[in-house]
Amino acid sequence: MSIKDPTDLGKTRLLEIDRNRNALLVGVYKSKEEKNITLEHLDELKSLAATFGLTTIDKICSPIRKIESSTYLGSGKVSEIKDLCEKLNIDIVIFDIDIAPHQQRNLEKEIKKTVIDRTELILGVFAIHARSNESKLQVKLAQFKYELPRLKRMWTHLSRQRIGGKSGGYLKGTGEKQIEIDRQILKKKISDLQKDLDKIKEQRLLLRKKRKKFEIPSFAIVGYTNSGKSTLMNALTDANVLVEDKLFATLDTTTRKYYLPNQQQVVLTDTVGFIRKLPHTLIAAFKSTLEEAISCDILIHLIDVSDPKAKVMAEASLEVLKELKADKKPIITCLNKVDKVYDQSFITYFKLNYPKTISISALKKEGFEDLMDKMIQEISNLRKIIKLKIPQSYYKLVSEIIKKGRIISLNYEENDILIEAEVPKMLQKKLEMFIV
Ligand code: GDP
Ligand code: MG
Image 1 (cartoon, helix red, strand yellow):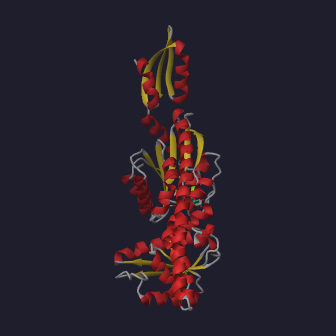
Image 2 (cartoon, rainbow, N blue to C red; image 1 turned 90 degrees about the vertical axis):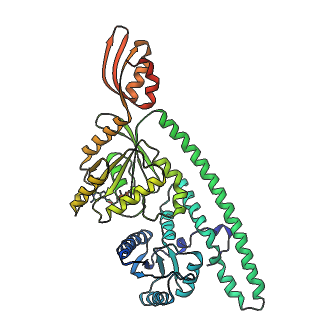
């Protein structure tokens, strides 16, 4: 690969690859007990590859005793992969582990095919799904950060080509210099992008403050990718979010108003899903969106309970929530896809081990009453019921209570209004002097 134009820098190579290609997946395990987990991860990698448009032809799940510093795998394994690539007409080899930039270079040299790792594949998937300006910038930022230590591979063709030539030594030096120049350009791009993203973040912060001022309880639907978050969002609101049996179909968050059966207004946010081994470059790049998404009052943790891997997926999601410091918020555990559950013991497991668990089918719109009940209950946990005596001349305050809280009873007594109401925390302060 050669770079003619410096603006090409940081473009993931993956996007330049024709997406209708054949892939070979490679996973490794250290102990026998790890083998099954590795196989599961390879399944997930296959879905990621399919989402990107690659066809998985074969998988290799190999035990590994010692990591070879130059090629990660031992030479025997590497030549086995090379032969398999030729035999099966493979175009691209995808490792389920993070391989170092120099190992990747060496593997490509040996195998003579494009070699990528899980992070690069996820970056590619994110890149093709980014819709909004912000998510496009975020993906770019993650790509640049990923490419920075890998610039060398783009120039190896130069060094290799000319090493044998008359002035090989000199030209090789040129290659090295070029890498340094590119590195500086890329670093500058990274800091520019960061600034652009900071600006967008500021704007969003303003919006969020505005929403907070209105004290409307907010819920975020979070969970593993493909658990049905967007399906639930669409079933409840008119959001019309893209639903696909693909990983990371949704990168942008969508927020909509929703009225609970008791006429309580709430806001619902659909979020990007989580995945095991989510690349750090991506968490970092998406941190502000994720934080924004979960800067809500209550989380709805959606779990695809029909998936045999439901338990580890749920744990992985909680891990990410922890990383984003959102694990202390009230969480409603919402088991989804109960219409196709094959193992009922999963439901029991979650009911015993997770807080506030209910079951639904977002697709069939079943179990929604339970979900609503839990939502109402959680809101009232956030709020307090108080009794007030307010002079009638303070009618503005009364209408604020009606708007932001829930009136339980309202009576007139001479010039005062007697109110029993459930009110949000913020309003409680303002009402302090009228509490009876
Ligand atoms: P997201 O990645 O969490 O937003 O998941 P999506 O909402 O895009 O859904 C992923 C896939 O799961 C789609 O094919 C949905 O049709 C399917 N799905 C969602 N909810 C249910 C459900 O309750 N039952 C069944 N059987 N499939 C569902
Ligand atoms: Mg979605």
